[in-house]
Length: 269
Image 1 (cartoon, rainbow, N blue to C red):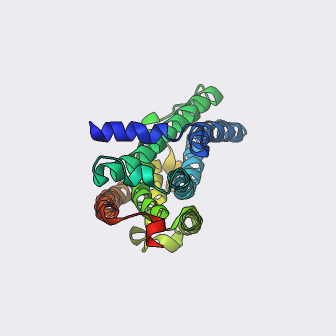
Image 2 (spheres, helix red, strand yellow):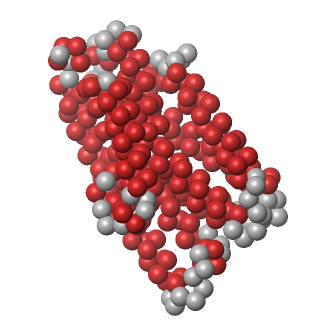
Image 3 (cartoon, one colour):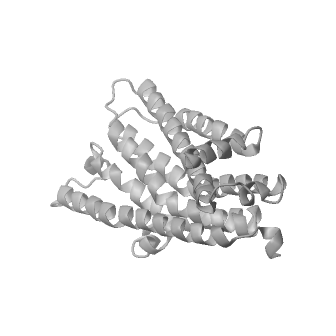
């Protein structure tokens, strides 16, 4: 119960702050803009393939930066409202305070992602009413995008509490650039070791399951191509998903241990 109350309290603190406006407006505006962008696409078998490829390419690369901004703004609000007294003097356990703060921001992100996806899918069906849209694949891509970014939320929260919004956003910008670069052939080997690449890497492979992907990539003449794609999909799922989940658990544990001893940035300085 303490956790749920703390979770609700953390969200209520964001009222009339830039954080609240971002989480309310960005997913809606982005999706509407994206739907208008894809309205020029040719309505044929390539439609949902192109949409999936570009949508998740953009979202997975920008989410590390957006999450850094959200966490930075949220912690900046805690600092400006009383130098973290709201965090450090609340009569509940430090672990509950820390985890409720982290999970509030993650929960908001999850809701935003699904709102964005919902608008996108409605827009796709409106633009291409006769086409078959594989909703489950888009849902899987969204879930994998979120999973791949969970570790970064834990990392950003520690950095933001320790150093402030500036370094947090700076790391988010750098991470976005690194993540984008590692979606190319540069990241084929090293991506499992770079958290900024996880979201993009594991969210893109469900495209292999979309109808006509082989035709879209002109791979019809390659022998055993379907088997190769299925094997690649399984390899990414068996490697990327466990890495994302285990690393998130580890960063949560480390964050709780650190926060239990933290006495505020001003006290440290």
